[in-house]
Length: 330
Image (cartoon, rainbow, N blue to C red):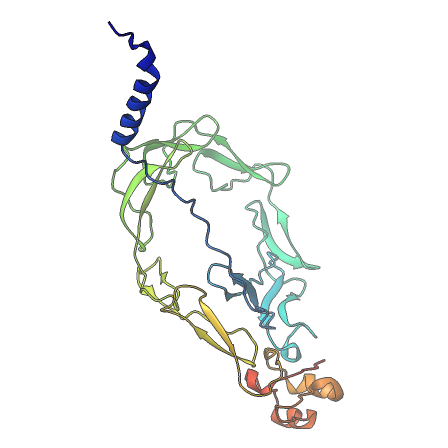
C-alpha cells in the first residue's frame, strides 16, 4: 500500500484553493464619510451697530440678527440707533442706554419691597415688614412671607399637587426638596410639544433618564439651495428667504448656484477697471456732517464726488453701496 503522507502538503494546498474559490467575495471596505468642508464667508461686517453679524459656514453666507440692547437695568431706556448723529447717546452707533431720572417708577423684582423707584441708575424699594405675606411664585411652598433679608420664602408643602410643565408626566407632586416631579407616561404616548413645526408628537426618552415630548420636523425644503428653509413655530408655515451671496465687493458679480453641486456662491470678477468699494455705512445725519465738514465724507472715483455741503443741504448721506468707495466719517 502506498504511503499517502507524501501527498499531504499538496492535498492541503488543493483544499485551501478550493475553499477560497467557494468563499463569497467580501465587500470592499466602506470609505469613511468626510464632513462637509466649511465654506468661507466674505466680510460680514455691515457697519451697522444694530445687527449682530455672523458667518454661516455651511452655506458660506452672512447672517444679520437684530442686536439685543436690553441691559437688564430697569432704570435705563434701551434702544438701538444706526446713525450716530441722530442717536440720543452722543456719538454712539448701536445700543444706547439712557439713564432714567431719579424718582422714575420701576420694579426691582422683589415682592418684599414697595414704592420702587430709580435712584442713581439703580432701582430701589422700601422693604415690607418682616412676616409680610408675599408670593415666591413656587407652587411647592406655602405661607410665603418676607424675612429679615428682604426675601420672600415659604415652607415646602411636600405632596402638594403641582405642574412640572412636562406633557409626558402625570400625577405631578412636590417632593421633600420642594421640586415638582411627575411619573413618566409610556414611551410613544401622543403629546403636544407646543410647536406647529412638528407632527406626530410623542413622548420619547430624552437620553438623561427622563422623558420628553418631541415630534417629526415639518419638511420645509423647497429643493432650492439658494433659499433658506424656515418654519414658523407659531403657525407651521414655511418660508424661503433667499440666500445672500453678496461679498461686499463691487468688483465682483455675485450669484447663487442653486442647481450646481459644489460651492453655493460664485463671485465672478467684473470686466474692466474696478476699485474695491466698502459696504455702505448707516445714514449719517446733517448734524453729524456739519460737526466736521472736512471729515464728513470723501468719495473717490469711480463714484461721483459729493461734498460735505451737499450732505448738509440734503440732510443725509446716500445709502446705496454703489455710491461709496472710500469713506471718512466723524
